[in-house]
Length: 496
Image (cartoon, rainbow, N blue to C red; front, top):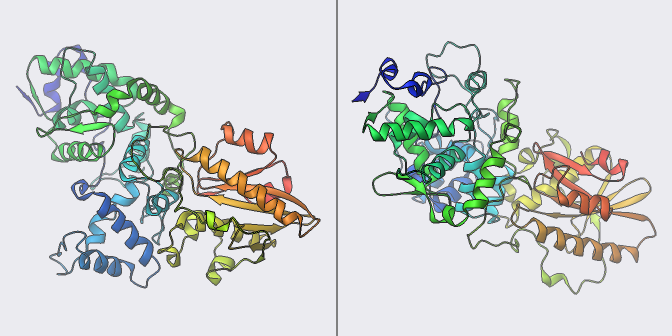
């Protein structure tokens, strides 16, 4: 029995009378069809090329040359131009991982804080794939273009929202597989089952219905298909992407199941799935004009509270390569502050977009601490635009901002949820020492500030600890822009 036509589903029992019809005609889980090339080496090379040539006169050609010359990906000569155009083919992999904003919404190539963190080695490949897979959702601000032939007056994301869709595919698969494990059925899924039973789901409340439908289908040994080749391919590509996370395993028969990692952390991940599938844990932007931009800022910035997935990779937890706060400066007994050195005149004078992605420039592409340096530039440029005097000491302090009656000392740290506690402790030690050194040079009042390249919410412990308990200003990112917690209204207004 093959169910290719929607009308044939009505022959099933009452469960099939309302499920699994698609929420609307063109609904699917859109995903790039180049998942097979994704490896740590390829992803790093794509991102490095993007960061290096983003400001070139012809960045596409420069990126193509770099990728082909270094044998990163096959040339893929296009029939129309007889030229290699690998960037055109593979660039969508980067915004799908939150590494760059979509080039449809942003004219120039720009790296996000997540992209800079990966390029700096602050987060490993599988950790990145895991966290971003569980953050990806439908609707989102990347998949907004209508399908070919779609006559709807609203975007694809708005169609999904209007249909009541609120799904995180990775979490849905995880929940369905976990539920199947409590039955007598094998806890695995094929691409056909994902295509027919999971993609039509509207919310995570559908999990029990999905599991019952899968069990019924397996009992009658029916071969299922939506009749849409694109749906099956999307399902297969989602399986490939999820197989690169810690949470899933894809076997030789192309069945996906929970990994040994998931089984070991079952209780923790069950709690996580409940938390991240709450309606308030989803992104959504009602304005069609802002969808791409707000999504890129949300998805392209790590949040201190988001997705505390147990880490297993042996990446540098403490970020010794992420910022120049190393032991060789221990002999310093005095600060040598000087006017902040702008790397380009544009950074200090013409860039008024105020986001961290827009301020990153290609001169940092060979830096070992790109994200840290970009955050420092963003704070300096923000203060400069508001007519504050900005200083630094390359050997010690990241920034010294002169206020009307006081100074603000700032130490910046690139951070992820994994190493946040350590980074805060390290920054506190440094900024306290620099405050001590500065006390021998001026009698001015001083405030201390710590800048973190991560989103910090109002109820996070770090805000209470730093701002409320220690009276240390906390500068973080919100929607790609600076957001400051401080007891000082002057500081809050200056750095925002």
